[in-house]
Length: 425
Image (cartoon, rainbow, N blue to C red; front, side, top):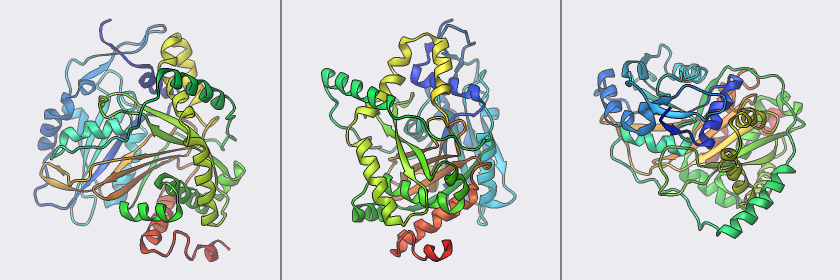
């Protein structure tokens, strides 16, 4: 069979779906109210001219084989009536969030290109629309999907990809060796109560300058502040779940290893595990502890380099049956409880079919057996946060509401926990 071999880091997520947990990445673009709302035909035309022209968007998976690695082959055609759909909400924004959860529960057919786009109507009392983009994780990671989605937007933005000086060959080999030893001693996570394959989706947002100033004031990174706010909100809405794991949730923090010249296709990330207290302690103490723990794990790149080495070239060097077993064995609630990914986005105003973007929120898949995946994306001065949850373990709407309350207090300058001590007492 001819075609392009799916890289091991990408095929990993195909094997993960053997657990039944769909692995889609994407986002929802909330459009400004407009009297020039695009028709479904206009949406399909934009997709056909941009998105569907990208390499993976007109390819499908070849027939699987026990020993042969998966391959991308050209699809006979791209059926835009199936890939690009229209949905009308009957209850506004909550209907949009519920619809995203329903889409996230559905596996992508493997006999078609593995993506879907929906224009969702009437998500607000003003008649505004939302654009939902879902791409299988085997095609791209979060930033890769953002880059690919730009093909439908105007103007074409410049996205700054953080990068540093790459270590030399010997230094890299030494770092990987140390990192592999560290990963081997990280241990396993306390298992959560039984999970489900259902999905909820929620959103939160805050002005990027506000959260940056707060992080600087506390001497922490933005990601540290976000994790602390999540941990505090989780304890408020799911204290029983937190207590079931001893008040410590293991967060997998996604670290980007993509270079500015990388193609949009493929996964170029690593994962760092950090134990986070979820026990109701005062916020200042919680934030200081989160910052200290992330510094210990992130100030040296050894774990990130080792994690990346395992995904590629490590998995490329072993037989496919081993990879098929390995992926679900290591990517689940045995090793982690939640995923957090903080991604950069464009700074200039963007348009879809001539309609300005109002806000953008990333959509991440849940790791099998875990209850939470959080994506944060800066977009034209606002940090948009998308929360994917398993409703059997976490009340997703309650978590989103709690996080929005904390962010609102942060924005008003009263502090993320102002007035909460009495509510908990």
